[in-house]
Every structure is written in C-alpha cells, then in structure tokens.
Image (cartoon, rainbow, N blue to C red; front, side):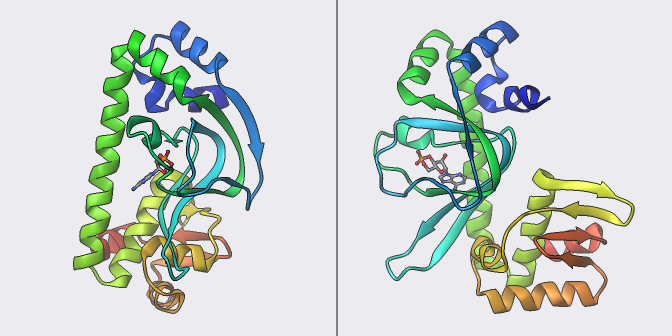
Length: 225
Ligand code: CMP
C-alpha cells in the first residue's frame, strides 16, 4: 500500500513497473518526527525526497524572521528537486509537520536515470509546471483575495491532500498549528483565527485542534473564488 503511494509520485509515472521498482531500490528510506528539519533554505542540496507517509512543510523566512509556508506536502509528493534542475542552494526549508517516512534519492542518481529514461523527465516537467500554476494562483490570491477567501482556499487545498470523508463532511487532519496555518495563508494568526471563527459560526466548518471538519464545501468554494 505504502509502495503504491510512492509509485504514484511524478518520478515514477513514466516508468514501467520493473524500472520503477529498480529506482525505488536505489532510494534510501528514512524516518523523521515532527519538528525535524530535513534541510534549510540556502544550503547546498544533493538529494530529493518522496513522502511515503506523514507531512512536510516547505517554508521561507524573511530577513526580519517572519515565516511563510509555500506548501504542505503529503504521501506521494516530491520535494528537493529544484536545486538539481537549477544547481544552487535550497529554495526553502523542509520541516516535518507529522511523523514521516521518506525516500531519499541522490540528484546524481536521478540525473543518470533521466539520461536513460527521457519519459521520466517529461513527467517531472509536468509536475514542475503544475507547481508553477499553483504558485501563480497563490500569488494572485495574495494580491486580489481577502484573508477569509485565502483561508477557505487553503482549507480546500489541504482537503485534496489530507481530507477524509466523514458523515458530516470532510475531515482534514492538517496537523498545523494556528501559527503554521497563518503562515500558509500569508496573514496574521489573529486574522486567520477570526476568519475560521466566522466560518465556524456560519456552520461551514468545525475546528478540532489540528484538524478541521469541512461541513459545507459548497459555501467554502464560493468564498474561495
Ligand atoms: P529545493 O530548492 O531543492 O529545496 C526546497 C524545495 O521546496 C524545492 O527544491 C522544491 O522541491 C520545493 N518548493 C520550492 N518552491 C515551492 C513551491 N512554490 N511550491 C511547492 N514546493 C516548492
């Protein structure tokens, strides 16, 4: 089952099963717990990671110490490849949000695979293009949307990764603190809290610690537009 999740990562999509399993065999599994930092923004990078289990946040810090989250990744997702395609320092810090099992692959190893299997490169490009689309959208939201709109969008986005259907709606165990959720939305903790409290008062969501149950996805989608 865990293997299936890994094989759904873009890195493996263009490979037949035998080649995919051979590539997995070249990867080193590692376990990490909440709070572990896998690498820091600005460091040189020599490997990429695929998430088999758990959650990883990718964040950047401003010169005055404020943090912004670029993404929260879950099973089947990949990170740490940018510093291979464009050799240079890591573009973000990767920190474990929920205890994780990861597969590591040396950039050099992947470069050898790409020379041999051009189809893999096409799928990686597609994954990069998808990420650019998402980032463009997030940038436009920062400029054009208000905080409640961005909160609604962040919850819906997290639900596509971590949502689980329950009787009342979709339960999203995001494992983020209020501060981290605010960093993901790009607003202060107070403003994000206010938006969440408002959504809860309207019956659109119910908050449960580091999870939220989306009770009215339609309304949230309309608010996110
Ligand atoms: P790298 O620069 O090696 O290390 C940080 C990683 O964060 C980077 O590779 C990407 O895998 C990932 N990353 C950087 N920017 C974004 C983004 N905007 N959205 C999602 N992931 C990103």
